[in-house]
Image (tube, rainbow, N blue to C red; front, side, top):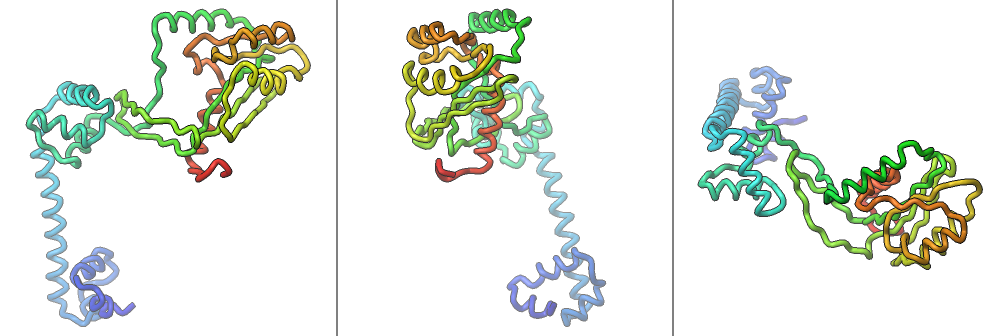
Length: 294
């Protein structure tokens, strides 16, 4: 490579020389010969480069030592985070900075990031937690206890799932209950009904167009389409959705010998098919499809 041509092409020739010096492929004499300049010029650029790096490192150390949060305890820091969460419902560096400014503490995002890391805050995907009352908790526990001695090999765990094409995972701090309300665009979602069983395997029903489920539709598409044709004894497990527990649906199950168990309310985590839905949604999000056809 003709380094002299390179220097003529770039306006800031010395910055290019500094990069070449950093690589360390050439001694100063060799580099001076290649570039057609004196050894003293190369030494001067090398010295300036070293001083610049030292000044930059010293500047970083000085900035850290001047951090306005240097003497803040972890408890005080955590209290500000709680206040920020109370105001906005979500904690980010920007909102946290604004909260500190209210306390007359001016801190840069870079310093704030270092403080967060030093105090053990890390980024993670927000988690969805069910809002459970004491009554819900008792119902969940009673339902689980009643099934302890049951043989679930022939059980069919079922559930509907809506997969949204433009799902977005936000990041929040570990230990912070960060939630964001997002409007759901049903035009960009696909409805999937699924059932899984150790004995009967898996079954899927997919609808790409707008699809409303009521008792008649549930009986026609799911019970008659997938459950009734099964041979052998089974227990059909479903959640408490209106279409599932409607009088018409329950009467149909009794008249046609379908053994049904309805999960306790607010208990999607007690259904193993939820793990399949979570994995499916992660894969769709990773692919980022542009349309339902994708």
